[in-house]
Image 1 (cartoon, rainbow, N blue to C red):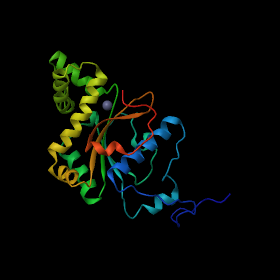
Image 2: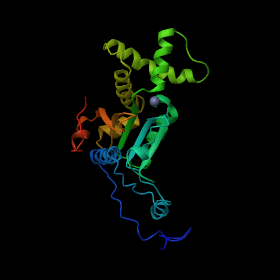
Image 3: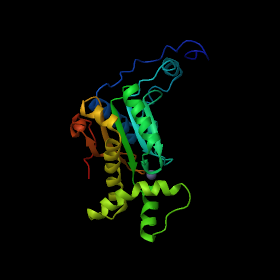
Image 4: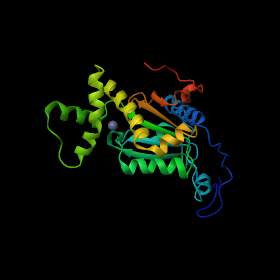
Length: 234
Ligand SMILES: [Zn+2]
């Protein structure tokens, strides 16, 4: 048994050509397909071999930016069954956005040409729960955690206005709110979307099932490419 390549040597012969989605809808369909493989227990673990590691060392062309919650159960490359060079990932508790997050997204979209931004939230999100408890008790948390809670509060107010009070319903609203916040706070991103070069999709992940479900998309047609999802949005 020979190994595919040597340390510091040439890429191994087993590297397969990787077709990079250049279109927002294709990029979303690719993520959805990877998530289906993860859910079904049939992951391919693409782009994780030594050959691919060497191939992408000189430059990156990620096909999606993931703005996700920092929750330890939400690792983007695992749940979307992708590998090195595929995803440009920015994570904060409760996928809250600030200048560094916006700057990172703008870098990927404008410098790297990434055609899709995905906001990745999940059920039972601790950041949303913390904000809810803080609002209920009128007691802000200590330290910089307050910045996270404050960033979630607009979503809580919107949920209250819409009569939504279950935690997962609030999470969906917070994901949609984050999609709108990215576009509202980044004229650079909004211009890329308006010109059709990029799209922003919000998805909710279920911790137990491992499945993502779209809850928002700008433009909405980004979701039109068939993904073969096993269940429609509930
Ligand atoms: Zn979370």
